[in-house]
Structures are given as C-alpha cells and as structure tokens.
Length: 316
Image (cartoon, rainbow, N blue to C red):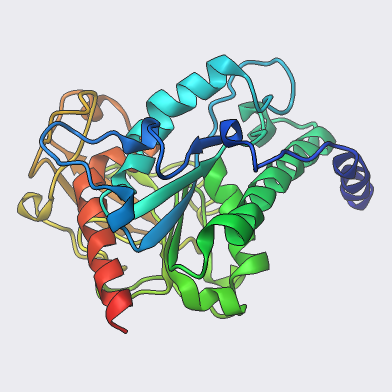
C-alpha cells in the first residue's frame, strides 16, 4: 500500500493543473446563466447580488463508462450529464440563499470505487481531489472576499470534500466563515475532524450534516463496515436522534418532474448510522438504495434549512 501511495504521489504531480480562471472549467458560477440558476416553476429566481453567502458544490460521479480512470475536464457528454442531473437536481437547492460555485473536475471513474486495482484507483481519486482542492483555493483567492460559505457535495463529491475540510477548514481561520457543510452520500465520521462537529439540532451552524438514504427497513450488507460510526442527520427534522419524522413535517421533494413539488410524501428516521426513508411514490418504492435521490427526496427541506442556517449565522 505504501508503494502504491508513493507511486500515486509521483504520478499525480506529473498531471497538468486545471486553470480555474477559465469560466468553462466551472459548471456553475454566479452572475452568469448556467444549470445552477434553474428553479422549479413555483419558485422565483433570486438575483445573485442579493445573496451574502456562497456555496462551493462538488458533484457526484457521472463517469460510468470503462474508458479510463479519470474524466476529461472538457468531455462534453459527461459535462452535459452533470449539468442536467447533478447541478439541476442538487446544486440548485442552494440558489435561493447562496451564490453557487461548482467546479468541473477530473472525476474518478465509477470503477475506482469497486476495483481491485488499488494503485490506479488511488491515483484516480488523488487526481480528482487535486482538481477540487485547486478549484477551492482559486475560489478563496479570487471570489470569496471574506464572505461566509457553505461546502456541499454528494457521493464522490463528498469523498473529496471530507478531505478538503480536514486540510483547509477544520481548526483553521477559515472555519469561522463556514456556515455549514452538507457532506451527503458518503460516510463521514466524527474521528475525521478535531474541531468540526456534526449538526445535532436545527439551530446549529458551523457544523456538518450527512445522510445516506435507504428504503425504510432495508439493511445494506456493508452497514457494519462501510457505514460504521458514520454521522447521520435526519434532513427533515435536522436532528441526529432516532425519532421518525411524520409526513406532515416533510416540506417537499422533487422526483422525476423538476417542476412538480410533492409535499408530505416522505417520513424519515436515523437507524444505525443510515437514514431510513418511507416514501409515498410508486417509483421510490421499487428501490431499496435511495442514494441517487439523497437531495431530491428532501429538496424543499434542505432549501428552507439552508436559509434558516444562514439567517442564524449572520445574526451571530
């Protein structure tokens, strides 16, 4: 393993850096029209000039074909898929309250999560993280200007933002600017951080929130390994207790039809470090692993909670 890591460090250092001064290397930037500006037809668009907080969003894996270990930054098909799915369905949840920054990055191929070829997998993740970190540092140097910010992500994105928080935020001066972190869809444990704490109640700021959605009653095979000690927050009640929310507490989901708000359709509870969701929708009932809908199922709940967290943070 040590040899693999050393080999990776050498190989990754030879990779060219992405130029984040080029706007085409961002899936979303404020003050331009892109996928992150979309809102369902029942909501009004809020001008970026009225937002006092930023969100740095890192999208999940969209590189599914066995055609290499890392996606090209300018792969038109992957970028289109990213914009029409991850950015539209996930990053837009923040656009009522935040200026949205979402860098394109040379994401690792989905096979890197499952392969026995650990050397190439380590290299692939390291290169992807190199881009995410470079984009965040560029954001800090050229866009942030001391503004409060949120870090948000899903799946592979969270794999990278967990480390980003470790290296650049946890216990650093930058932590004072962190409104919250939404580390969704990949396990996060309290042992990863010395100072950052999970959000345990709806009024808490400067903390991180994580969850992993499964059908109510389903127990994944890797529950006691992959999800061992994982932090899990209920994205309806915004608490870490095991009390099940009621459908009436659910503010709304977006599923299949982006413009159709579906209210009182989900109840959820934390069970053994994962989130059990009971969903009143025919499609959702067919699946036990609801990972792909980690944001969609609670879209309006997240949107309202972000606004409230920002309000509380700015009052401090």
